[in-house]
Amino acid sequence: MNSTKKGAKNELSAKQAAQYSFFENVWDVVRQIPKGRVTSYGAIAAYLGTPKAARTVGYAMNACHGLKPKVPAHRVVNRNGLLSGRHHFGSPHAMQYLLEKEKIAVANNQVIDFKSLFWDPCAELRA
DNA sequence: TAACTGACTCGGC
DNA sequence: AGCCGAGCCAGTT
Image (cartoon, rainbow, N blue to C red; front, side):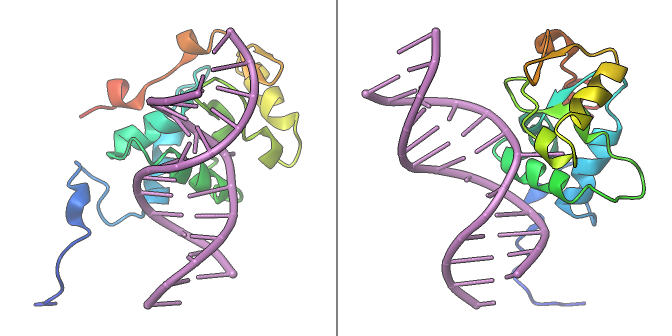
């Protein structure tokens, strides 16, 4: 006990986000995305308490490959509804193919009616 | 230890 | 209206 450390790093003070790394938290939220819906990196980051950590969320996706629980990263797109991470699925069409299977219309690497299909974790999971 | 990267986002021109 | 640059966060090397 008495680690005598400065104690910093507890700034998260969110509800959970406790011992799990930021990545674990991101994956957990992504897995909660309902089928047929999509969300943005900024929305996930904001839910974790860091609206500016959108880049970090995308970075977490980079490590989501090979995870035990499947992470529907294909449901995560950028703020413009563009499939920015399609190139990281091994195949540039894999992400679009998965989205189409979810009944999500995709054109030109962009989600159609993205605004309507947008799923906000802070509004649905918000504690 | 320090520096860089990166699947983003916002603002300004 | 579209294009460009800077900022931010966490993890990796």
